[in-house]
Structures are given as structure tokens and as C-alpha cells.
Amino acid sequence: MTIAVTLPDPEKLVWWRDHLRELLPDHHINNAAEISDPQTVRYAVVWKPPEGLLASFPNLKATISIGAGIDHIAADPQYPASVPVIKTIGPDMTQRMCEYVALHVLRLHRQLPELQKAQTRKAWHQIVTPTAPDRKVGILGLGHLGCHVARTLTALGFDVAGWSRSGAAPDGVTGFNESGLNRFLAQSEILICLLPLTPETKGFLSKPILEQLPKGASLINAARGAHLIEDDLLAALGKGQISYATLDVFNTEPLPSDHPFWTHPRVLVTPHTASLIDPVSGGKVIAANIRKLEAGHTPDALTYISRGY
Ligand code: NDP
Ligand code: OXD
Image (tube, rainbow, N blue to C red; front, top):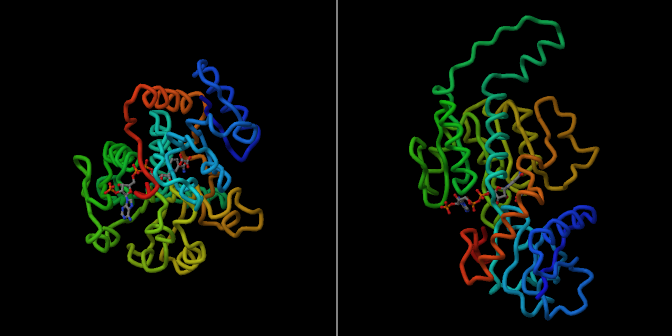
């Protein structure tokens, strides 16, 4: 039985393969491109797999995403739909995302960019901001990460609401379902996107959505670049409809050097590091899920491409 590993970055591929070999010493773990007998592959551990690769393994039992999102697997039109996908979500990844969002919500809430600008002028510019209970924060997507982030922000005192298909929300968080979208947007002074990328959510952060936010709202996108219509955000920033944007994910990654986001005075770019998965902690989660599958148990994070997330 073989476990195939594929990532576009050759160094990361070796990093992951070697860590998985240490964690699962009883299994054959190989670079997917070097597998001579595709019949032997039972599991594939993947990030952005090449189109058709997974369909070439006739005995594939499950595909393991090196990440929480499965959009990079769903993007393959040849993906064998009956093969389940396991998302990788570990405590470290959850903690990192909570830290990332807390950092950037506090930065925007306390108007740090304005203070930094004042410093360049040596201006003693005292700004009195409301306290957190008077700041309304909205989270798009109240799944695993959205719920943890919501609890983190609630613990900091923010007035937190979330939007999801079901509208279910953790204690202390106001939940809105699909029909409550307009009311949710109208009150979100800081909007955080933690939606999965699906055909329904692609391009969601567009002019009609941004226009429904309170004037001068801020946006944090830590989900996927394709959620955002970049030109609509630039236009909204230009009009002052959006004051600031913190963007971790982009349509093209790495963000091209001539992209206007790099130099926009009211955009902060981070290089898809909100919650980077690493083979040390992520590998443990993946190894535990493979052991569960081998023992005939179902990992919590099992899903199907047809569900979309
Ligand atoms: P989950 O699958 O746990 O949660 C998804 C949430 O989105 C659920 O609340 C779901 O609703 C909601 N949702 C899905 N489709 C719709 C829709 N059409 N309309 C409204 N709500 C919808 O995902 P995670 O929280 O684990 O992760 C979210 C995303 O974060 C990942 O898919 C990935 O793209 C991104 N990510 C980014 C990272 C980074 O470093 N920047 C790191 C890790 C993840 P319901 O609850 O009703 O099912
Ligand atoms: C993920 C990511 O989906 O890192 O986990 O973006």
C-alpha cells in the first residue's frame, strides 16, 4: 500500500514526504510523480494536485488535503467524485488563524494605520476609538475556523455576528443565515471572510456586497483570493466605502510585483500566512487521520467534493 504525496513546490514536497515517512514508518510514502504502480496507491496527500493525477489511482480510498480548504482538489474536473476528501485542521492551524484575525481586527479597530501615518509626519495625533463592545465585527463563514475566530473576538469584547448557510452560531455571537445577509452586512464595520471557496462563494466579495457595509467599513480576507473581485475592492477603497483592507489571499499567488495592492496606502498584504500548515503539526493530524481510516473509522473532517467544503 502506497501513500502518494504531491505539492507544487519541490522543497515542500520533500519536507512533507520525509515528515510523513517518520510519522507513518509502516507505510510506503512516495512522491506521486515517481510512483511506478498506480494500483498500489491507497491515499494521496495533496496540495494543488495536477489535473488528472488522482483519477490515475484506481484504488484510491481517500484524498487528504494539506490544508483546511478543498477547492484546490475540486478544481480538478477529473477528480473521482466517490472518493472522500479529508480536510486537515489541527489545533495549531486554528490558533494561528485566531491570532491572525485578532491582530488585524485590533489594528483596524484601534486605527493603527492612521497612527502610523501620523508618525511619518511626527504628528501627535490622538485618536479616541470606541471600545470593543461598541465595534461590530461580522464573520462570513462560521465553520471550524469562523467559530474559533468568533470566540476569540468575543473574548476580546467585540460585538460579533456571523453568517453561514445554517445561521448556527456559538454562544455570544449573533448568527445570520442566508436570508439574513443584508442585515448582517449593514451592521458589519469590520468584515472578515472565512468562507470556503465553492461555485456559490466565488466572487462573493463584490460591489453589491461591499456597498451594503457601513460607509468606511474594513475588510479582512483570510479565505481565498477568488472570493474577492479585486477591481470592486479598489473602486470601493477609492470612494471611501471601504477604509482599509487586509488581504492574505489573492487570485494569483505569489501576488505579482506590479499588482496595485502592493503599494496601495490602505491595503495590507500578507503572503497567505494567516494560518500556514507545517509538516510538524499538520503531519501529525494527517498521520492520525490515515491511522483512523486504516482502522475503519471516519475522520471528523471527511467530506466530498460534491458538498463543496
Ligand atoms: P468549514 O468548512 O468548517 O466552514 C465553512 C463555513 O462556511 C460554514 O459555516 C458554512 O455554513 C459556510 N458556508 C459555506 N458555503 C456557504 C454559502 N454558500 N453561503 C453561506 N455560508 C456558507 O471551513 P473552515 O472554517 O475550516 O475554513 C474556511 C476556509 O478558510 C477554508 O475553506 C480555506 O479556504 C480558508 N483557509 C485559509 C487559510 C489561510 O492561511 N489564509 C488557512 C486555512 C483555511 P454551514 O455552517 O451552514 O455549513
Ligand atoms: C488552507 C490554507 O486551506 O492554508 O489550509 O489556505
